[in-house]
Image (tube, rainbow, N blue to C red):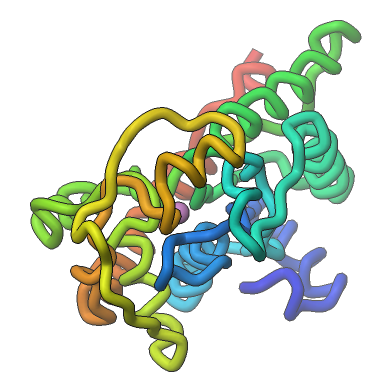
Length: 252
Ligand code: NI
């Protein structure tokens, strides 16, 4: 079930059978010469939307702008600074919690978001801790490539040239969902360099075409479809486990 395609009455009905909501979260940032700018928000969205076709989960609108300051040297990248991102995540969580959602599951598509999302959770918990009150909801962060079986599958599909940015696995997922938007280019070098991540000008100087350690030419829509199926199954399993987590405040 997609929240943005539902009515308030349908969401109220969903709350009568579940208090869990899944929020795809990512980033709009350059992904090399052939990767879509939306890759990091499209991947978790594609996986969550696929999962809700076979499982009774509620998927919130995709939080599609994240922490991507290091990609701002490339046109099309849009970034929130960490403090803005923390504030926005907080208000998404407070909104959903106000309706009765108690398990807020963030399915993430951008490694650069992780530190800030975890900091946002800590800010939310701190509000309750300083007040000496229960928070009323729990947050979970999961990167889609960490869902059960996905990393192993990607390693078998792309034993060399996977890399860490503009990877063939994430590009394959978008190719499967949007075959009309597949782009091609001659990559030079074939496998991109690796190194540290700092500010935007430094990033562009180190990684001139935007890739890090990857060979996106290895991506195919078929491999993307295999990844989406594995990840969607893993998501349903992980969301069920999160939903079933005991709440010691209620038990006490
Ligand atoms: Ni990415």
